[in-house]
Image 1 (cartoon, rainbow over the protein chains, first blue to last red):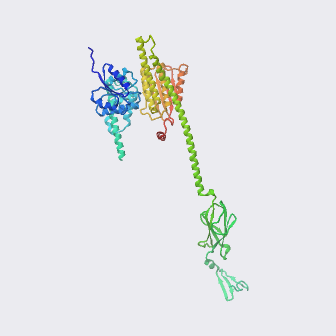
Image 2: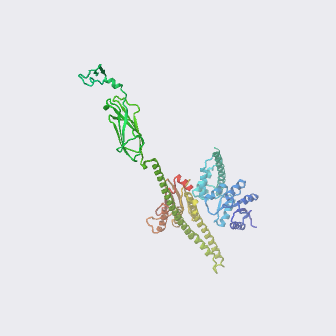
Image 3: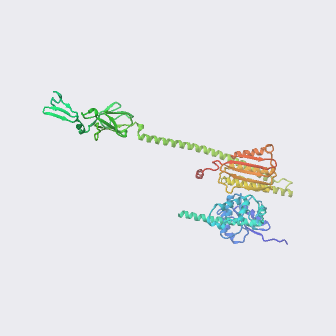
Length: 219
Length: 407
C-alpha cells in the first residue's frame, strides 16, 4: 500500500466561475491536494474560512465588493494565519505589494502553468515565501520611508536586510544560501518573517497616519 | 502846498540838505520833509489784474469763460494802483496748479505762459515796495481751460477698459485656438497610439491565437496518434502562455498608471530575471534605492523596454555570456539604462552581422528621445547604454505637477 500523507487543504476565493471550476478540478484531481471550500466573494470567504482548518488559501485580487486585499487584511485581523497566495492576471507591484502588506505571503500569476501552481501551493504550505527582486526593493523602501517612532519594534534584523539586499540585486534563493551559508529553508523562513513584519509595519504605519490626521484635525 | 512857491513859481523853490532833507518854501513859512521816513511809512501798493489774454484774445469778464479745448497761450497783465515810485514797484505772481511757488517778476507787469494744459487754475499776483513790503492778499483770477476729449479722465478710463476688453478677447480667442490645436494633436496622438496597440495586438496576440486555432484543428489521420496529440497539446499550452505574456506586455504598456520610470524599471527587471533564468544566465541588478517619480509616456516606455529586450535577446542568442548586469544610473541631467554582459563581444567596426539589429535599437533610442552607446570588443563582453536626458516632460517643476493633477 502506497503511503499518502494528509492532503493539503485548500480554499479558493475567485469570482469568475470558469476559473473557480478549473482550479477546483485541478486541485481535486491532483493527489496530495484537497479543495475544501470555494467562494465567489470576499464576504463569503470571511464568513466561511474561519470555520474549517485550512492549509492554504488561493485568493483572487479583483473581487466584486470587498477586494481580495481587504479580505486578507480582515482574515488576519480575525487571527487566522493561514498562508494566502494571491491570484492576479498581471504581476503589477502596485497590486501585489498592498496584498503582501495586508498579510498575503506570495502571489501566483493566472498564466502560471498548472504544475507550477501546485508546486507553489506545496512550497507555501511547507513554509516557503517567494520574493522577487522588485518586491524586495519595495520592502526595503517601505521600511526606509516612514519614520514613525513606534516602528522601532518592527525594524528588520541585520540578516533580513542582508537577504533583502541580495534579493534586490537579483540573487536567487539558491545563490543567497551559498553566499550567506544558510539553508534555503532558513532563507524561506526569513522571507516569511519579512512578510509578517511588513504586515505589522504597515498596520502600525496606518495607525500612526490615522493618529497624525486626528492630531492635525484637532490642532 | 499847492502854492505857487512850492512848485517853483518863485526862486529859490527849495533845496536839499546834506542830510537828505528837503526844504520847501511855502506861503506860511518853510516845510521840510525827510523822504526816507516817508518811504518807510507807506503801505504796500494794491495790485490789480488788468487783462487776461488767452491765445491773444482778451477775456473781459473774470470767471469761467467758454474756451476752445486744448493747450493755450495765456498772458496776464497787472499793475499796482499807486503813484509813488511807480517804476520801482515789485510784483510776484503764481499760477496755482502749475507753478509750485511765487515767481518774482521784478517791476515787469505781465506774466506769460506759452503752453498751459487744460485744467482749473487761479492766477494770483501781489505787489510790493522795493523794500520788500508785500500786500497781504493781492489779486487773483480764476481760469478754467477746458480739456480736449482725449485728455479727460473718463476718456482714459474708457480707453483702459477697451484695451482690457481687447486683450481679454485676444487671449480667449488664442486660448480657444490653442485648445483646438492641442485637441487635434491629442486626437492625432491617440490615433497613433491606437494604431500601435492594434498592430501589437495583431502581431503578437493574433499570431498566437492563429497558431492555437491551427493546432486545435483536427486533421484526419493525425488525430489517432496519441504522441502527436500529446505534442500538439503541449504546443497549445506553450502558445497560450506566450499569448498571456504578449497580453501582459500590451496591458502594461497601455495602462496610464504605468507611465513612470519606476514601473519601467520594475518591468525590465522582471523580464530580465525570467528571461535570463530560462536561458541559464545569471541576472544581476544594480538600481538606485529610490527611483524618483519621473514620468515616462507610453511610447517612450515601450521603446525603451523593447530596446532592452532586444539587447537581452542578442545576449542570449550571440554573446555566450554567463552573467548580465542591468544597471540604472540617475543624475539631474540624464537617466542611463545599462545592460552589460561578460560574453564574447564583437568588433563594433564590423557592423555587417548585427548591423540591422543595432540600427533598430538606435532607432528605438531615438524615438524614446535618447541615444544609444555600444561598447564592445572581441572577448570583452558588450555594454549597451541608453541615455535619456531628463527633460521637463519627464520631470516637470512642482507647479506643473499640480497643474496636471488638477487638469
